[in-house]
Image (cartoon, rainbow, N blue to C red):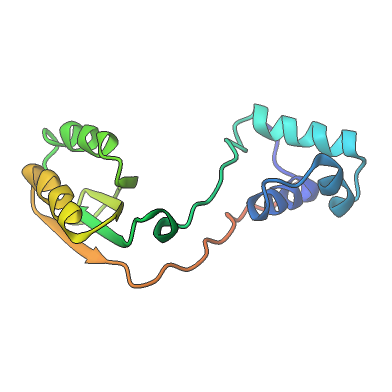
Length: 151
């Protein structure tokens, strides 16, 4: 896809803030008609720039009262098994492969300490783990979009 222009970047910022905006409202805010805004949104989806829409759920509101970050240091040969386990563990909500001493970083939400212990122990089969409890989460920011070289 060609580089994003100023209007594409504005649309992305709006939809990252509120993915439920209608095409008409997006168009109004960026100065386009509803059909033109809808066409741009569809193009952004088609090119894999917008990959989906989702509800953001408050973990504590659904009984997930413990939020932790688990770092795992493993070997190349154990990496596929560790990733497979993370995929099969519902409490692991995201996984990052990172550089440095650790290999993987897991974002984990559990209902209680005993379940967190079970998750930590299951991941520890693949190498040393370090677990940090999250004291507070701050709202995520929108992803920046690289400025267009043509606008």
